[in-house]
Image (cartoon, rainbow, N blue to C red):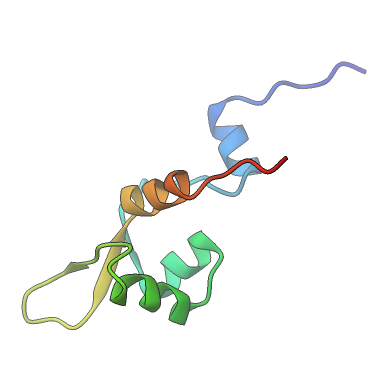
Length: 81
């Protein structure tokens, strides 16, 4: 039986990074799920200024940009021998 080659979207879905809505801003809870960390871990990244947040004026709610989260992942990638 021939092995099926995955298309771009199928590959992203298989890797768990598929975003069908094209959503750009994530709540802390959604960002935690996206990054595979607890919500307090996300808060600590914010407080230590590792990742920026988006806040609306007059609102306490914080959002994380998916591009910043992807940059954080890429920045922290490493290869072990």
